[in-house]
Length: 83
Image 1 (tube, rainbow, N blue to C red):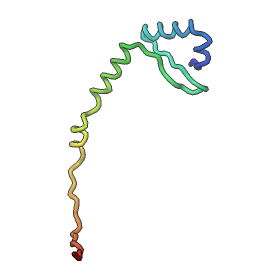
Image 2 (image 1 turned 180 degrees about the vertical axis):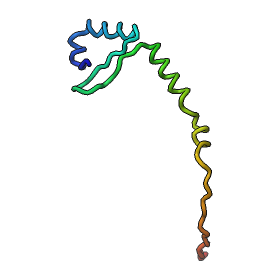
Image 3 (image 1 turned 90 degrees about the vertical axis):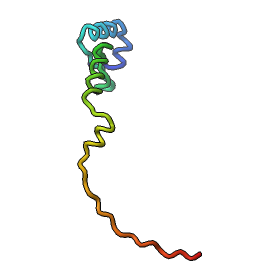
Image 4 (image 1 turned 90 degrees about the horizontal axis):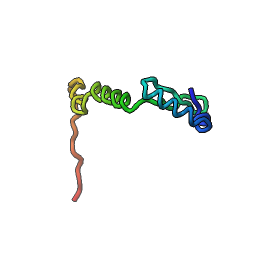
């Protein structure tokens, strides 16, 4: 994993990371010792995005998938209003 500071100091190696991503080898980049981003090729990113879009239903499909339940409503009597 790379730190952002390493990437700044070693830009030529960053170019190699980009080349690796273009070759289909994603590379993780970290910040302050924690994973931050993954460098992937645009083609792979587009493929992942399309797969995610196809896997999730539309909002209408999602709402229609909820089970139908009957809701009992309490009886309400209007209050008296003085005019």
